[in-house]
Amino acid sequence: MSDERENPAAWEAATKLIRGGLARTPYGETAEGLFLTQSFVYDSAEAADRRFSGEEPGFVYSRYANPTVKMFEERLALLEGAEGCRATASGMAAVHLALTGLLRAGDHVVGGQAMFGSCRWIMNQWAPRFGIEATLVPGADFAAWRTAVRPNTKLFFIESPANPLLEITDIAAVCQLAKEIGAKVVVDNVFATPLYQQPLKLGADIVVYSATKHIDGQGRVLGGAVLGDVALLDEAYRDFIRHTGPALSPFNAWVLLKGLETLDLRVRRQTETAAVLADRMAAHPKVKALRYPGRPDHPQYEIARRQMSAGSTLIALDLETRERAFNFLNALQIVDISNNLGDSKSMATHPTTTTHRSMTEEQRLEIGLTPGWVRLSVGLEGAADLGRDIERALDAA
Ligand SMILES: *Cc1c(COP(=O)(O)O)cnc(C)c1O
Image 1: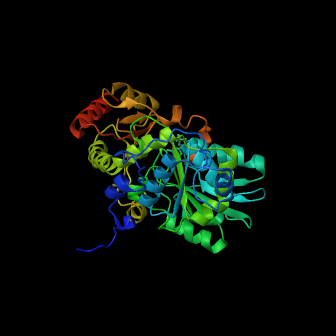
Image 2: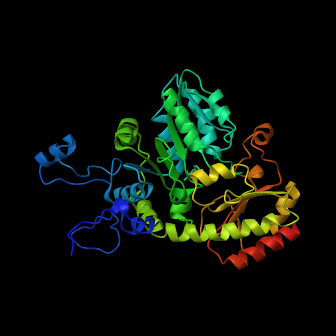
Image 3: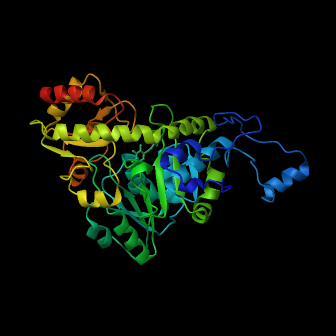
């Protein structure tokens, strides 16, 4: 018998997702405790004094920290292999926090042209109000990231695979460039999930998630997270979180903890089905082009293979015209028409008229987004049922 303690950092992902961050109260509850409390009480005035000075550990107010939220942060950090994690109310709160905490007036940030619509708004519309300049480049073209660098470039913001056409950016190469010029790198890792891509290991400083997507994965709550070294999280984000309040609700954190428990199971099954469906759709005569990071015909397949361990759960397909795309969507009987992704329910969306409608046509053409494209998020339904539904809808396209 050995009295050696288990090292959680060495666990398999599946174990981390069930056991990570679990902090039981003296009641010995099985499931994670849900601490729906705004604030905390102290045994004495002296104890409050010590708590506020930081001399004594503990919670003071749920805008700063909360036991249920902390369990979620610790579990996600363990999975990511990150020193620390700060949870936020939504993915956009996480992206906003991640970027603004690292930038100030006079700085320049470089990002990919293809990215989640609201992230693009922060870069193009919001950041300039505070004297921060942004340049958007074709994310798959590494030379363009280098060419965009200016003397005041302080940050690179990468989304890979990017929304909606699953373009891949070489994360390690951009991180290397960042090191050369003393800039930081933030990666929005939603599409790959923490199971298939670990940007911190590739040299990134900060990883952000919309926990709304695969982490909940069951259509219930919004949430987000920012992960990285504790020193950087403290320096860049601690005071911002305390004083501006993007805090995650303890209830939502509890739901997300339950989501994490099945993340490995769900995402692996969804990915298996996605790979099968991608091959089947690619062979259909109505499909003009198809992008799936797990297929050798993906334009950045070599990079995808280096930095992702699987193709994940999203597929983009080009049906040539908006009319065919609409016919396809309208003929689906199982798959929902919805702009969400990473869910247990399969969902298909037409980016041009939904998620990417605020872009100009010129901007859409820059990222190759023509009206025939549909984005499919593969869920947990049976692969044969999904295959039949999609095949029928393609025939109807
Ligand atoms: C959904 C999403 C976001 C925003 O997350 P919310 O939780 O909806 O605020 C940011 N980035 C990517 C890549 C997303 O898919």
